[in-house]
Image (tube, rainbow, N blue to C red; front, side, top):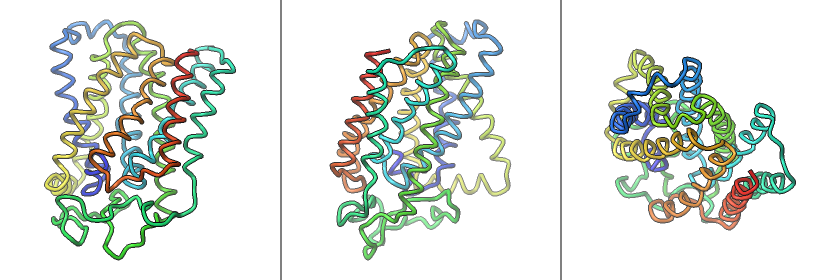
Length: 317
């Protein structure tokens, strides 16, 4: 869904929709589960950690993730995101004084090998990272029919290719995707430590998610005061809104379960399991974005190796 949405809008638009609209969803969930009535069980320091995790994860990390998906696609981005486990494990060793076994070291090696395996020279037809023909909803030119969705900054990436475009992915575009993908992984690897420290075994994961979303939303709402920002968001809503609305609901459920897991289980268990999402991304990309994504052997093997490494880390935790 991010891949489709980013073809018609900017990463910042994706943040406005998925983060701000996530607040009422979490509020309803916290009310239904009754966790909102136990909000005082989380300490003030805990809320500070949750706010920091929300701003880092949902603003900086998600922005980098959107940019990476737009540049190189969801499939190529997954092994990069899996490296977030390395940061989580390293922090757990340093901060929580946990030890590492040789088996865990082997799992970490597989996680690293996955992204490295994807580094390859430009390929011939099929490794474009762009559609061979315009996707549904785009005119034959491959550009959005609504001129308002054409953006002028680096925030806008990955429009469909023109018919005469070369199939090879430009090196700069690949470098952009790797940079933002690894940046997102670094952030995603740190925030679970913060969430776990804030919630410990309180079982108030949904309330914790609400606090994080509210902090991130507060920052975004302030930025809407920038002249012209609201008009830009409204213009992009016409072309990319549906994809990011669906993304909002999916992200809400994903984060709700993630925070619930971190409230009752160690990071060394939750973080590696969460990274098995690479397999689901691969499957849904094949079903929905078959003409947009790259399904080369290197990418698929890289994803599988990363997931195997994640499972090894879970089993040895």
